[in-house]
Every structure is written in structure tokens, then in C-alpha cells.
Length: 279
Length: 234
Ligand SMILES: Nc1ncnc2c1ncn2[C@@H]1O[C@H](COP(=O)(O)OP(=O)(O)OP(=O)(O)O)[C@@H](O)[C@H]1O
Ligand SMILES: [Mg+2]
Image 1: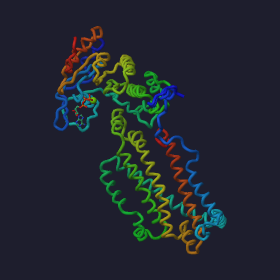
Image 2: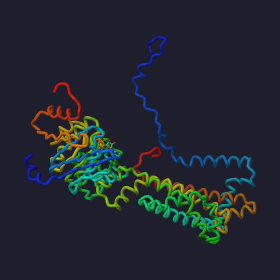
Image 3: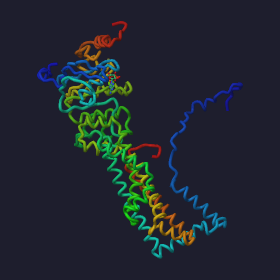
Image 4: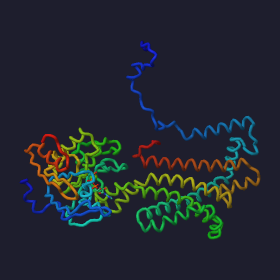
């Protein structure tokens, strides 16, 4: 309590001597298991609504129905086969896209000739919606596996290329100068400065690429399915089995979440030198 | 300069008619300069007078700059920049060893600049002065015959700068490289160098040898006068 009695507001001495911490602008410490909070909440709402009988079971079956159907499909052996088929497609497509994206970005980023040949071409490729290429690729490669892998590879390589190339082009010129002063060979320069410097950008592209590979997979399997998860869901649609469709969606979701988390984990490890908002 | 007389016949750095221009504007206009091996030279001049341009020419970093003239410099040249230029993704020791190897040598160099024990730190964990000392260690580890420094202490506070002056003098005495130090600080030039050059209108306007036993104030006045700054009482 201040003893001063004036009409002018007076700052109490205790307040003025106390040092106040600045308002923090970074979001602060992470919540534990932060990424699970949202999904768990959603699941809880879904369960509650189902239990209360507010959802039409034919349209949105209860979570436990989905789990039971999933278990049934798993023991029957069809689900593992479908998952494996889908994973294989996504995996091959992703691997090819990753290698192509990185190789093209390096070629375009490290040589002017490479840039002239590659950069414009990739941007042209980017301008064409990749899924629009499906009919053409079916004509070229048949309706088997290769066209699906090819489409996924294209969906994946573009964001990886674009982000890695942008990161390579954005490498601080001062570091290039340093490399010259320190007498680095071209190889050492690429390995010790160019690649580590471009890694943050590469990881942005990698995460987009991972997401892209699932997106491509879903679209391909929904439209041109002859096997795999999408095929399973397509059949279920014909027979009105919404629980099977949800099983498929859950599996896709798990794929997406797990792969994205894996990339984030690797990113955190590899880029441990970074102190950013997210650290 | 008795210890250097023998080497005077073959200077470490030799410039003849060095010319550099940007967009048709001549910045260096036929510079002739010899730096004997082991000499500590400071280069003063107004902002924009071409100090960095000269240094970058000697360092061989001016790839796209128009110019002519003869330039001889030793094989092993190190450069210290105004910013420490440590790679953020390498630990301090790995930064010091950039372009060379020899863990032991790197540790020694870090110890010489007072950073023993900080080998595994990330550059972002060092203070500004420590970062600059790490940069100094990186330049020393290569045992340079010529050390080029472009305002290496420009970004440091006055206290740290004084300590860095002492450190640089000491390292120079121990390793005996020729030094070309660009600075805008007249006192820094006098304290550190054997010889101070003033760059003016693209030429060396003043070439002053500093005798340690003469009063510094005398040099200070002459240098400031050469830089166009008049001081009240000489
Ligand atoms: N890359 C460049 N392109 C065009 N002009 C340049 C370039 N580098 C330097 N200059 C010009 O050359 C002149 C000399 O520049 P320099 O950097 O050598 O000056 P300086 O003496 O080092 O100045 P400071 O003390 O401010 O660092 C300046 O007028 C500058 O504008
Ligand atoms: Mg400069």
C-alpha cells in the first residue's frame, strides 16, 4: 500500500524496482505429446457421439465397430496384403522421387548448365497438375504398378526439388567466400558447406514430398484400383460398408502421421545446431 | 626492422600498378606496395576509399572485378573477416579445422586464443568476442605466411577490442606472418602495426613507419591530418 495521497496516479516503488521479464514472443515450451492432443480429442468426440446414438451407424460407424472390422480384416489376411501393396507403391514412388529431386536440385544448383537445362523444365512439369498425367501414363505404362509408382515419384520429386534448389541458391555468399579462402576443393565445398547449408530447405521439401506420396497413392488407388487399400475401400463403397472405408482411412492416416513424425524426428536430429522457434 | 633486413629483398606481398574499378569508376588507381615478410601493416582510409577492395584483391577474392596490375602473394594466406563467419552447423573445433585436418593442431590453436574447452560448442553458443577469437584460431591453424584482416574487431565492444589487440600482437610475434590489417580506427592502427598506410583517391597517400619508442600522439596527429581530420592542439 502506498502512503501517497494525490490524485495523480503514482507508481508504487515496489513495482518500479521489480524487473519485469519481457513478454516472450516465441511460443515457449512444448506441451507434452503435443501432436497427439488433437487426434485424441477428435476420437473422444466421435466416441461420445456414437455412444449417444447421435451418428447414423450406416454413415459413420462407431470407433469400436471400425476397430472390430479392422481386426477381422487383419485376421482374414486381406488387410495385411492390401497394406503391403499400398506401402510398396508409396515406398518405391517416394524413393525414386526423393533421389530424382535431390539429384536434379544438386545438378541445377551447382552448375549453370545444369540450371539452364533443369530448372525451367521442372517448373514446366510443375505447372501441369501431375494427376492430370494419369491417363497418359496409363497409355504409356499400362494399368499395372509402374504407372502408379511413376505418378507418385513425380508428385514427390517436385517439392523436394523446388525446396532443395531454393536452399542451394540461397546459400550465404559469405560462406562461399570463406570456402575459397580456406582452400576447399569443390568436393569438400559441396560436402561441408553446400549440403549442410541446404539441409533445412531439403527437409521442408521432404515433408511435402512424404505428404505428396500419400496423396498420390490415395488418388491412384481410388480411381485406378485393382489392388491395395484403395481397392479395398472402393469395393466397400459398392457394398455400402462404411466401416471398411473408415478402416482404410485410418490406415492412411496412420501412414501419414507416422511418416511425418519420422521425418520430423530425423530433421530434429540432423539440424540439432539450429535454434529456432520450434526448438 | 633489423630482423627483416634479410627478407627485404623478397617481399611477401608485392603490388605493381594494381588497378580496380567498378562500373567504370576507378577505386584503386595503380597501387605500388611491398610488404616485407613478417611485417605488420595497417591500412587506413575513409569509408569507400577502397580498403576492402585492396584486401580482397590480395586475397584473390575479386573474381568479377575489372582491373589490371601485378600481384604477388604467398602461398598460405589466411583471411579474417569483420564477421566471424563460423559455419553454424559445425562445432567450434570443426570450424577451426575447415579445409585442414589435425585435431591436435586445432585444439592448440583454440587454446592459444583462450578457447580451450569450447571445442564442442556450437558457434551460436559463443559470445561475439569468442566467435571472433575462434575465427582467429581458424586463420592461424593454417600457419599463414600472410594474414589479411578486414576490420576484424569492428563489431566488438571497446574492452574486448583492447584484449583482442593484445592477443593479435602476441600471436603475430609468435607466428611471424606478414599482416595486412584494414581498419578505420587510427589508434588501433598505431597500437598494432609497424607501418600504417593511408589509402586516398585510389593511391597510398601516406606510408608511415611506426617506431615503438616515439610518442603515439605524434603519429595520431599525422594520420588524422592525412585522413582530413584536424585536431585542435597538436
Ligand atoms: N561489388 C561492388 N560493386 C560495385 N561497387 C563496389 C563493389 N565493391 C565495392 N564497391 C565500391 O568501391 C568503393 C570502395 O569500396 P570498399 O568496400 O573497398 O571500401 P572500404 O574502404 O572498405 O570502405 P569501408 O571502410 O566502409 O569498409 C566504394 O565506393 C564501393 O561502393
Ligand atoms: Mg571495407
